[in-house]
Image 1 (cartoon, helix red, strand yellow):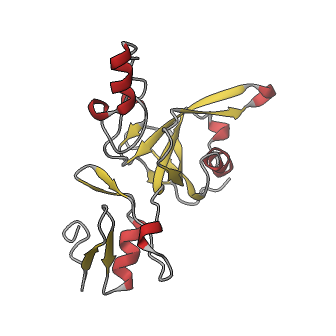
Image 2: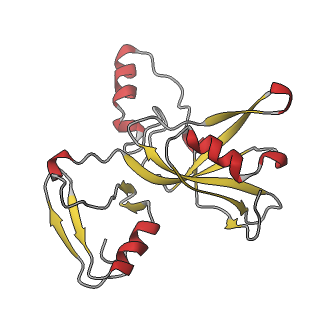
Length: 198
């Protein structure tokens, strides 16, 4: 992580066991840079990071949320607004940022939301919005930098070959088709649109 984070000054790590590590930075700027760059991947696994509070007992810290950017694909032009992004993002929990982005090599833009994603839940492939004349619109969701991911159950943090759901279904002879695949994962895409507010 020292090299990934561009060799921060006075950087040190304390191992608390059970895969919990505490990082120390000599400069607040380095820490802010590392926070804003989240999520970080190490060996293709998300490093679930959060600020440590002095009154916390490490044994009681639960890392269930991670900052993730989600692309909303398939929105009609009139729904490509920050307000629509906030509505969709609100269904995930805390929304930290919403914006419109130009897509490289394409003429259209997309709405992206940054949420505190609960990694104890399966990723959603779609979201539904109320459209014109009470019609429901279904939009695809693509997640950026989620690392190792299971195409079978939709959870972050393991691959299909190590999926307990898939193993149990195999033993019962009831293996289903993988539903996630490339549907949910995307590389970070788009350049933020400037001076665009709706």
